[in-house]
Length: 280
Length: 128
Image (cartoon, chains in turn purple, green):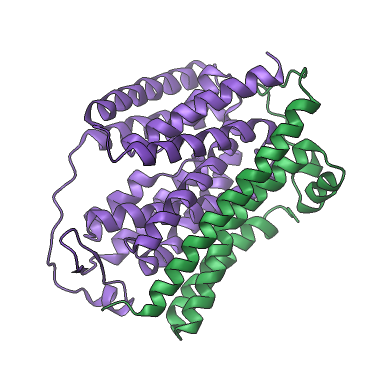
């Protein structure tokens, strides 16, 4: 395959990943690495590098819109980014020592887990929780524009638990070159009791900074190949922008189910290839 | 706490920066990609074996030198660097915003995040 053919196929694959990722809300990053390693036979380190930069592009693009609408809480985001960026540094260092087989297996497990998370109904959000001392001290309680017009106030709970899970989310992101948005949302929903709109958009806001923390290390280690990253970044970005546009009109229930089945299949395949030694 | 106007101002500036950063870097990557495709159409890149990138695609100095010589892969890499810099710039602006609000605590938190980012970009393996 010459450069033009390969680039066209990569562009198409990444566009599809970005489109499905944004339509289903599961993110394009999770399927990108399996797509590159299993179908294009790309070394997992190049795949992780390309995936990570595309994560920065999509999350920054989406966050730009959310931040302006006033849903994301920049204080919570900023504070938790201390945890995610430290985690990302550790994860990126780990990724340089973990054998590629190990990376493939861990990636497969994360894929299976995110498919499980996507099928599990979100625990109903708890409203009107009392203010928490630490969260109040950290000035995290906030408000956002509600559907009925006006604004809705919320109080934040259990900052230490949220902070710890965020460190883990950052480490996964740095190790595997994905956004790990699902874990971030989980921490904010469950531990900190944030309203859905706030946790989803704040998570998105944090993904870019988290990814930037490991991108420097990836770049230094030569994981980011321009010829590969170019079609991947442009494809995922345009796919996810289109996805966000048609999301309002589309019925995504069936699509979500199908996409999570694809993720399960890719996860199983990654684990199999990792164990059998085809990757690495 | 009802969020002040000042918080909204930070949010809007941050939104603008993110949008502009993504657009500019995507354009640079696109231009570099175009040069790359017309320059090495018949090459057969092989990503199956990890070799790591050459030194001049791993450091800012090397990338800028390559851009001045209009080397396609260096132009793409510059676009990717701009993309990585976008969230970093967002953090810098947040520090300025929190400082304008005289919120020392959040200036401190944001400074921690910025130093971690700078360590990754500058300290970990001398990218610059």
